[in-house]
Image (spheres, rainbow, N blue to C red):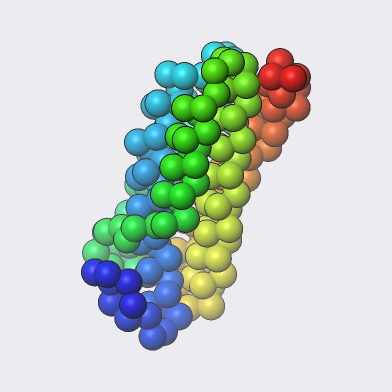
Length: 167
């Protein structure tokens, strides 16, 4: 059992724990994106980060809605995976001297974040449906759709421009 968390004995417990995990992760992302926006030099990348920051704020509100729908206190639990992804991104960004390579590094880090979010939301939707909470699943599906769309946009930015400039 993790520090400050209750034992996970049922699928419902796991659903709530996973909600808390992604809630923490989304809040960490919201704190990290302004730094990436400030460092991005490619206009499309900067705009993509700005758009995703606004989306992330909406996703946090949706998670709060799911907590309330499920009769749970809104709270996060430390997500070691997201902390690791963001720590690695920060470390890599501090090692890059060239601004165009830095854009590629930030884009790569952003996609690692998106892929983690996609797995978490997909899992949460499956859990919600199994628990008979199609209402929660519907709210979570909106976020999953946004995350997939963001990943596609980041891929397009990488392949059309950023990676070429970094090369």
